[in-house]
Length: 372
Image (cartoon, rainbow, N blue to C red; front, side, top):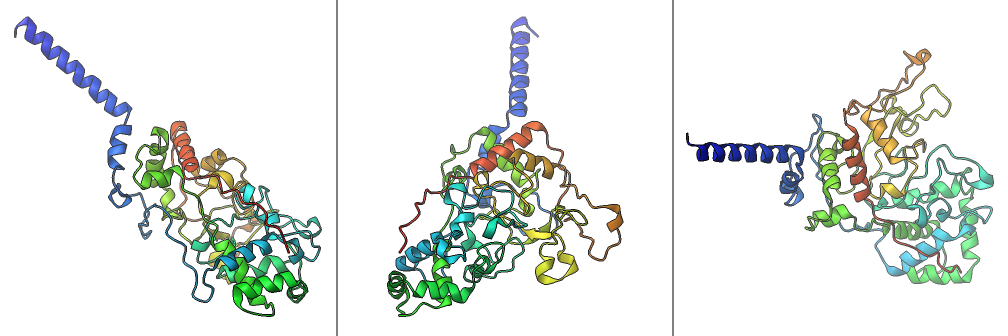
């Protein structure tokens, strides 16, 4: 082999090694190719056996029930009622007291407080995107937004209001009677009209488009390299799509994530309190991850205040701390087998955090309305 050929061979070999090193060290270009098309063309997610593949995507249009169709009059009326503290016995607490639009439609507290500063047991869930859930509250005790509206009104820890008194108050205000007549063509306010108006307003509270949504809609530069890697990890190695799937980033199901505090102070039996089925002990509804950056603290008990800590807990498989004395108890909770240690490194956890921020869009600013 001549000297020139040897030199050329060495040069080409070095270039090939350098190129291979680049591909190995920077897979972003390959990821962009894998995610260049619509979600149905993306790589298959890592799912446990029996978990259906419900791909991530943008939210569909809100569907209003046939017995409570949308009207602007009903929505505006519902907004007034949502912000009106006169629906509480003290005339000091409104729905918006715990579901503040400036706090991601939650309250930013570990657990809620209500009438006479009584403290609740659970974290206030954001009411963003409640239109897409089959059941509501952490334990699913309400089957619709209409049904849900009555729980906080009557709860002694929340608004502590007698429903008959609430309706009597509304009927004592001619301005409200006129608004209900415009919305529902009635001359007297009934409980079902109050439920429908509140539900219509809440049903319209939907997440704004996030960076992720723009990416799905065709703007392939909407996600940066770290966020794109986070998307891939979310769907694969991090196993998030076992529970947080579909456009809502929730499977609408109930799982025990090991945080029921069974046998310890702060114990909460979760879904069991609704079904009385021992298999439901410690199970809570999977929350949507949309706008998760703005809805902390997290978990049903508000026990986690940093998203990075949340990722660390799931990376460790969500350890379940139960006193030994509770072994053999008939209600001993079984943590979901979907939760397993993930062996994520620091860079991977940072990429997951970046993706969670990319599916979060600051909620739309909403001004409190002028009340009748």
